[in-house]
Length: 262
Image (cartoon, rainbow, N blue to C red; front, side, top):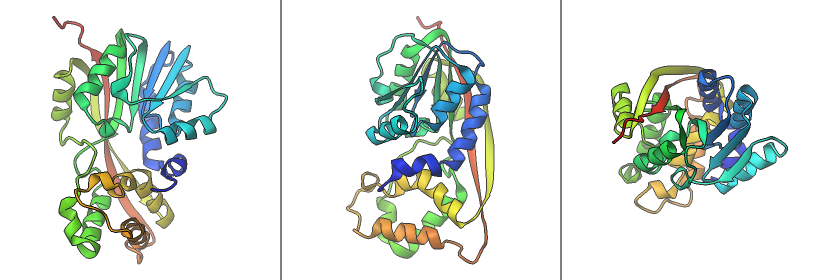
């Protein structure tokens, strides 16, 4: 996955569009903001511009992503830190916490939500935007099923998608409420795109590549040419068509702390 972090700034088409919807839900003014899973810093910068907080911290567990963020925004009033969400040790310091296209990557959602709850002020709000449904992008899911079938049929059963995707709004509500959050607002929205060849490949590289090209997602060793053949397959997918239509359902939530815990 060479240059994944460097290219994410350009390739994150869908994540950026969904982020704009999430930013519209944020308050116009904030005091302290924590952005979890900031990636290359592009969305963090827009959040800062739209909310003008007194303090903003943006974290990502990838050192390479933080390096890209610092390179892209060296003079901004955002403190970029390399940290996993489960390791944050703030106590009721933030009135706004944001997770844009990062919630699905949390390795332990109960621990992560617990850490976030500790960092959120009594009257603060947690804003989450995340891919929705197990088949998070049917077109890419179908393409990868075909890729495994044609190129590496024995590897399909050895692959486990690393992200957490629930299937219904009720499941998300249950997850949040059982981790001591009140759901103030939750809805789904599907983003549909008509992409040319280069755009389709860019979308694939912005997220799916991180999963399908990761040795840790397979229970057996990957062939040396696996990633090369996968990218070649993506580049040639539906080559007879000028455009490829994809749809990506996302979930948007506004959460507050359940302060009635005994």
